[in-house]
Amino acid sequence: MPRTVREILTEMKDTSEVIVDLAYAALVFDSQDMAEEVQHLERRMDTLLYNIRIKAMLSARTKRDAEQLAGLLQVASSAEAISNAAGDIVNLLRYDSDKRPFLPIVLKEAEEKIKSLTLADKSDMANRTIEELGVESETGMRVIALKRGKRWIYDPETDSRLKAGDILIVRGTENGFEVLRSFASGERSWPQYPTKEGA
Amino acid sequence: MDELEQKLLEVKDTSELMVDLAYSSLLYNNRDIAQEVMELEEYTDELNASIQHEAIKRAMADGDVSRAFVTIKLIESLEGICDAASGIADVVMKNVEPHPVIKMSIRESEVIIATATVVEGSDLADRSLGESRLASQSGMWVVAIKRDRRYLYGPDEGTTVLAGDTLIVRGPKDGEEFFKDLASGRARLT
View 1 (cartoon, rainbow over the protein chains, first blue to last red):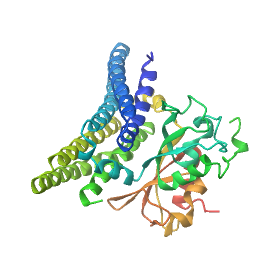
View 2: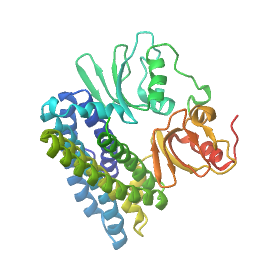
View 3: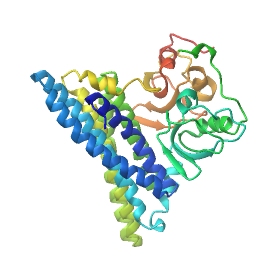
View 4: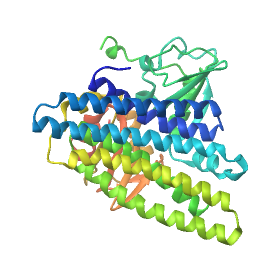
């Protein structure tokens, strides 16, 4: 469990962003695994909110502190409210899929589409992390999760090096997807920016 | 997709834009962006009410209660996200400087959101996004275009940008300045 107010708020903000993407992905792919991850994150957000409230109260010394911390706690509560909404979205999986056939269709039409692609053997994205590659700034696509064999890796930004055969669940525009697909299939090599190295 | 599904999708796209804008308003302590979130909140409230109304009307006509139920459930969740976004933006609207820790937590991530209004005479005006090749020139992808009071989500290469449009873009931090200079006419396309 993170210790400082800053660490907790950072985790809550990051989670509030990834959890909604995961929830939609769970509906699009009808995935119980992803739904469970959403529920897990939702429970963690409850705990984080409880802890940040206590820490914020302990750190208030002046009226101004209290006013600023009230705002900070409002941000934390809102992040938690977003994760609750994501939890409610995956609860829709409980209803028979023939009662919600339009949901995946509608979500697939969304401007920011959720799609999957497989990393080819000859792609030079392999053996590098998503953060090193800068996937989002290069292509506009956000990697929500990846599947390696039977295992899911959530929020895979920094954690793991990509491997050939990984299935990437990504979110972004159609154009961005095409760009990323050309790299992931090995059709094009990942651009090099020599000036940025070591920056 | 029918009209109801299109509205549903519009609320979904808007809810995501609202969260992005809300965190950005905090990062830059920017009241204009926060105000934008507040206005979108009112807009989605209206849209949500009309979707729920329409869903019930359809269920009464065709007896498909499950479908209406799932639609209304989803709308409630989306409304929860929109409300949370305006809760975040509301912190900026208060007359108290946001706590410095907030800014550190919304640390400069890999990708930022930026907005700029395209002026008359800018290289971006009266051209399609495909013609100006904004994404490859600046690294910034257009998420939405605000024209008068309307938002166009996910414009594509064929979408023409007009003078007066506000572009909401997502991309690397180092592309922001060039993008803003292009919009204001201070910089030219190469």
